[in-house]
Image 1 (tube, rainbow, N blue to C red):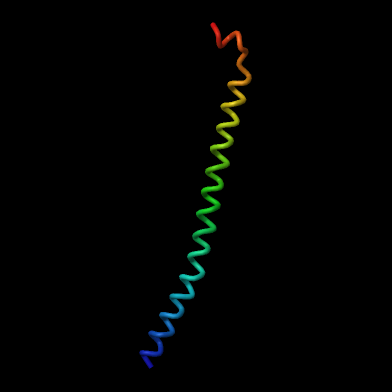
Image 2: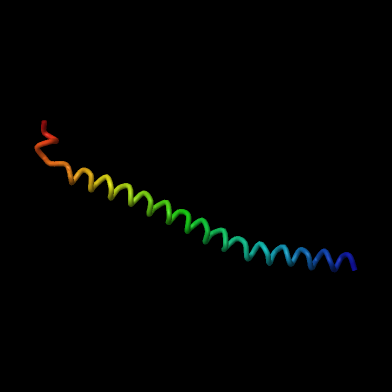
Length: 60
């Protein structure tokens, strides 16, 4: 009886791990995507700031 329970518990742990790993991969992908979007936003803001500066002000 105890042996059957251990085998079932091991199967449940495997099933839980099989569900957890893809979920962690999805969360990691979302975090990396958000970080990429934030970096792109900063780059766009910097490019807009550089473009807004008049050329004669840069040469002085």
